[in-house]
Image (cartoon, rainbow, N blue to C red):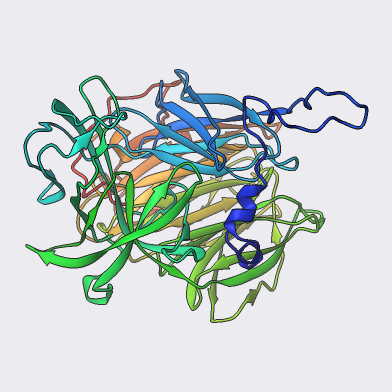
Amino acid sequence: MFNKGLSTVGLSLLLALTVTGCGGSSSDSSPDEGGSDQPPVQQEIDVSGVVRDYYTGEPVPGASVDITSADGTKVAGSAGEDGRFTLSVNRGIARISVNADADGYAESSSIASTLDNVEPTGLELSLLPANSIQTFSASTSTNLPVDELNVVELGANAFVLPDGTVYSGDVDAEITIVDPTSDPSVMPGGYEAVGADGTEGLMESWGAITANFESESGENLQLGQGQIATIRIPLAQGRAAATSPATIPLFYYDDQEGVWREEGAATLVTENGISFYQGTVEHFTTWNADYLYESVDVIGRVVDESGDPVADALVTSQGQDYIGSSSVRTANDGTFHLPVRPNSDVLIAASRNGLSNTTSISVGDTDFELGNDIVLSEAAVSITLTWGENPEDLDTHFFGPENENGSSEFEVYYGNQSVSVNGTLINLDVDDTTSFGPEVTTVPRFPYPGTYRYLVYLFSGSGTIEDSPARVEVSIGGETSVFSPTQAQGTATDWWAVVNFVVDSEFNVTLQPVQEWRDFGANPAQATVSPSALGVMEGNENPAKAQVERKYYAR
C-alpha cells in the first residue's frame, strides 16, 4: 500500500524486495557458508483462491489464472470446475499480482504477498461479465458500442499479432464498462497508482473500461506501432457531470506490477444525455479516468475479543463520498496507518481469522486517530448489500430468535439499527438511503440456536430490486458467498428473501439460500413469520439465471 511509509521507500525499492521467481535462483549465486557451490533451494508456497462471476457468485470453471511479479516471473494455470485454483510460487516476494480472465468476462486482478508472515490463501477474484461481445474485420474501421455509446473507435488495419505482424482477419472483441460507484473492489488491482512524473499514491476514479481483442485463433491483439484508438469512458453513476473535472488523467492497469500508470488524458463530453470521458490510447488494457490525491492516515489498532493485539490483520477503507479504497496490514502490536483521501467520509473494517464491524468516520486534512480499537470477532458474519442508482433506497432486514425457545424474533433494520440479544450486539453498521449502498450488517456471533433470516426491501425510488442490480455478499468462516436477485424464484416483488443462517445446538452455522420473492406489504413487521413458512432452496439447486438489462452493470 502506498501509505506515507511506502512513499519514502518508493515502489522501486518495494519491488526490489522481490526474490528470484520460479525457475530457480540466479546462476551467479554465492556459495553458502558451508562451502557448497550449489545455489540455495528456493522455498515455495501455494497461492490459492476462487474465480467467480461478480454478480451471481457462481464459479467460473476453466478461467485462466496467472501470477506475476516485478521481475517478470510468471506462473500460469487455470481454475477447476469449482472455480478454485492453486499455484506454487516462491516465498519472500513482497508483492505479486494474481490475475484471472475467462471468455465473456473482463480480467480481474488481486494484489498479494508471499512474505513469511503472510498466507496468500482464500483470494477472491470476481469477474465482471462483458457488456458487449462483437466480431468485426480488422481491415475495416470500426465503432464498438455499448448501449447508445461508441465506447471504442478503431481505424482499419490497426491490430498486430504478438510477433508484430499486421493482422487482417476477424477480430473478437469484449468491451466491459467498469463502474465502481458502490463497490470499488470491481476495479482490477485496487487504487495504487504512479503518475506521469513518477509520483506514487492513491487515486480516485470517475469510471473505467476494459477492452480485450483476440484473433480468430485466440491470440491476443494489440494496436500496432503508430496506431491510436479513441475510447469513451462512461461517467461513473456516482459522479455528477456538473461537478466532475473538464479534463482528467488517464491511467492504465499494469497487471505485471499490479499498479495503475498515468498515460494521456481525457475530456468530459455530454451527448444525448450521456456523459463520458473521451481520449486516445496506443494500447489496450483497462483504462481508468482518475486523479491522484495526497492522503492522510487513519491511525488505529486491531485487537481480538480478549483485547490482545492482532498482527497482520488486513485493514481496509472505502470512500463514501469518493470512489476509491485502500488497505494495509497491521504491525506486530496491532497498530496501523491507513491512507485515505482527506476531507472525506470513509468506511473502515478489518479482517484476519475473523471480521470486525464496519465503522463510518469523517476525516479532515490531517491524520485521524480512531478513539476505539477495532475488535475482531472470530465467529463473525458480515452481510453487505449494494445496488445501482435506482431504486434510490433498498433496505436490509435481519431477523433471528430473541429467546432460547425461538417464540419471538428480533429485527435489525433502518429503524432499529442495533440489537442486544443474550449479550451479543448485532448491528446494521451502515445504512444508505441515496442509491448504491453499501449497507453492512455484522453479527459477532449467533446468540441462540435457530434460524436467522436476511431479506431486502425496496423502500423508495423507481425501478425494481432485480433491475438495479442488487447484490448481497456474505462473509462467514473465511468464505464469501454472493447472491443475486436474478436467481430468485417467483414473481418479483418489493421483498427479496435472500438467505437463512441455520444454527444448531452446537452453534454450527449452515448457510441456506432462500432466493425467493415474498409479498409482505410495506410494513416490515409483516416479514416476521415462522421460518418454516419461508422455505429454502434445496441442496445446491441453482435456478436458471434470468438475463436482465443492466445500465453498464453499474455497481
